[in-house]
Length: 484
Image (cartoon, rainbow, N blue to C red; front, side):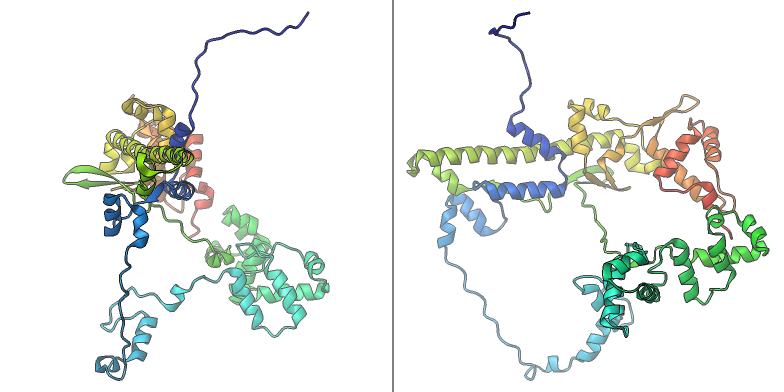
C-alpha cells in the first residue's frame, strides 16, 4: 500500500475558550482567600489596575482624572504632641498603678464582676508547643552537656501526641551515646510534664500516668498491663473472670482508666482554629429573607485615571505605549467585569437555594430536601458545571448556622409508603439524635437504628446506617457502651 500526501479542506465547529473566558471560569470556583490573592496579583502585574479607597483625596483624584498630581499635593502638617508630666498632673498621680496592674493580671474588675481583659499569657506572640515545653524542663534538670544533647534528640523525636518515634538503638546511633545513657534519658523525658509523654505505645503511656497517680500496683494498672485488648472490646465480664475481681471493682478501675489522656501531647498542639468567613449572609428581616454578599476584605478595583489619559489623542505618548496601555486596560476591565459577574452568579445561586430549601431556613436540618445540581441549573438557566464551580469552597451564614453551599445538595432517601423523600443530610442528623438519646448501658446497633427508620416508613439498609454513622464520626455500638 502506497502512502501519499494530500491536501483537504474540512469545515467543522469547535468551542475555543479565550484567555478571558478561562479567567472568568477560574474566578467562579475560587474561595474568598484565593480570590483576594488573585486580585492582589493582578494589581501587581497590571499597572492600569488600582485599589479604590473611600478617602476624600481618592474621590477628588477620580473626578479630576489626574492621579499623577497627587504626588505634588501639599502634605498636611503633622500634629504636634506635648509630653505629659506626671508630676504636674494630680489625676495621674492619684492612680494606684500597682493595683491597676494586679487587676489586669487577675482578670477581676474593681466592682467584682468578670471582665474580658486577657492575661499576659494570652498576648504572647507564640504559644509554647510540646517540644519547647519539654526542652524548657530539660534545661532545669541537672544534666551534663552530653545528657542534654541526648535529651534534646529524644524530645525532637516525639510526635504530636507525645509518643516516642525512635528506638533506643536509633538514639544511640543518632547521638553516639551508650545504650544505658539513652535508656536513662528516655526515663528522664517520661518523668516530665505532661504525664505519659515519651511513651512508646498506648499501654506504656497509660501506665506512666497511673504511676504518676501512685496507682502502679492497682487493679487499673493490671487491666492496662494484661487486658488492654479486652478492654478495647469492652468485654468487662471477661476481665472480671480473668482477674477474679467483682464486676463493680472492674467498673471502678475502668473509670480511672477512662479518665487518663491517651494523647498527652495534644494539649500543646500548635494548630490554631481556622475560622470560616461566609461569602454570603442570609438574614430574616420583617418576615422575609434578605441575601447580602460579603465583600469585606476583597480589594475594590478601579482603572487608573493616569493611564486613561495616556490613551487620549492629545497625550503625545508613543504608539507602542498606547498599544501596551490599551491591552492592559482591556485586561483590567475584563477582570472587573468577571468579578462582578461572579458575585451576581453567587447571589442568584443562593437565591435559588433559598427557594428550594425554604423549609430548612425556617425550621432546620431535619427539613432539608433532596436536591441535585441539575435542579438549580435548570432554575437559573445555567450549566451544571457552573453551579458546581459556584458552590465549591463557598459558605453561607443562615439563621440555622454556617454551611458550605455544597451542603444543600443531597441524595434522596425514599419512603415505603411512597411519601416525600428525605435528604441524606436529614437522615444523618436523625441518626445523630437517635444515638444521642440511646441508653448508654445498652447502645443501639446499626440494625436497631435501621428498624427505627423502618417503623417511620423510611427505606434505610443496615449498611447505609453504618456508612452514615462512620461519616458522622460515631463509633460502633460495642464501643459506645458505658461501663457505669
